[in-house]
Structure formats: structure tokens, C-alpha cells
Image (cartoon, rainbow, N blue to C red; front, side, top):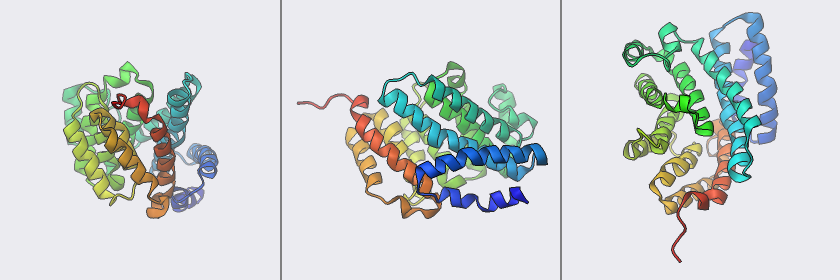
Length: 275
């Protein structure tokens, strides 16, 4: 009963406008859900909430902390990175528990094995495949670890399969992550395709999911050296009320915070303007 209640009240968290309240609620809520897991076992609905919850906690709060500490303040961020590894590790583990055996190890399989496993994937596998990949991809963006970087081609293949299985997944989040990875990858990227994926992500939310513009600025505009577009995208985000997408209010509040930070940091990512 408690798990069912948690599932029914999940939307209230996504609609929260107070970032500090959301942060505290997320931490306590995730531990409560893990307690339910010990009691009830691997219920699919519980595993889905834990998967999305830990990835959301890592990307929404820990990655944000890490960027402030490392990029803005020049600290080493080791403690935050350790917390992020824990969060994304749990996200990946709970995602894997929802997948059949070959897909649960999709990032570790040989190319031939992965091709067969992805071909056999079902629409119900799209969400855990996405979150499994997002956990590793976000940690890669934070730490740049070689072991994760070597898995980037597989992450791209998984995301393309997720899009085939669920073209509109989570208001275009699979397109968004694929576009960011293609735009930002130093090796194996594709700015043109990355731009198309990001544009598709924006279209799927009618421009209301503000994190799309924020990450387009950070990944695509920076990679192209397009400072004017970088500023225009982030300025547009800040000119748009987070309430434009009530069901994703928390994500939009986080996007506003990131947009302000990136505008402060933008000079570091572009060549100096000519005098």
C-alpha cells in the first residue's frame, strides 16, 4: 500500500517549485523507497521509481553541486563525485534489475552480442535502458573516466534503440541525451546529428522543457563556438517562467539555476571577443 501511495504522489515532486524543499524530500524519499524494497522485493513499479529517483537526484542536485565546486570555484569535487558515483551506481543497478539478462549488461557486451540484444529489446525495456545509459553518461560528463569514455559508442547505440522503441520517451529525453553526447564527444561525435536530436527534443516538449535549451547551449553552442547562440538560448530560458510546464516545474527551476551559472561561466568556454 505504501508503495502504491508513493507512486500516486510522485507527480507532486516533479511539480515542486522550491529547490531546497525538493532536495530534502528527494533524499529522504529515496531511502524510504529502498526500505520498501527490502520488505516487498523487486516490484517493477518500485524499481522504476528508484531508478528514475536516483538518476534524478544525481543529475539534478549532485551534478549541480559538482559544477559549482569544480567549474565555478576550482575545488577538486572528490567528495561530491563519490556521492554521484553512489547515486548513479544505484540508478544503473535498479535499471538493470528491470531488464532481461543480456540487456542488463548491455554496456559490457561485445558488439555482436549487443546488436542481438538490442534487436530483441521490447518497448517495456526502453525506460530502464535509457536510465541505465543516462547514469553512465552523466557520470562520464562529470568525471571523464576513461572506462566510461570507452563505452560511449555503445551508449549512443542504446539511445538510438530507445528512440526506436519509444520515440517520444519522457518528452524527448532520449533525443536530448543523444544530442548532448553527439555534440560534446571529443571523438565519435557528430555536431550536425547532435543538433537535429536536440531540435527534436525541443519539439517534443513544445519548448516548455527548459533544460533542453540549457543543455543545447552548453553542449552544442559551445562545441560550435557560437557564443551568440549560447547567450540567446540561456537568455530565453531565463525569460520563460518555470511554470510554463507545470508537470515539470522542478526540472525547469533547475534549468533556471543552471542557465544563470552558465551565463556567468560562458567566457571560459569561448575565445575572447575581438577588441
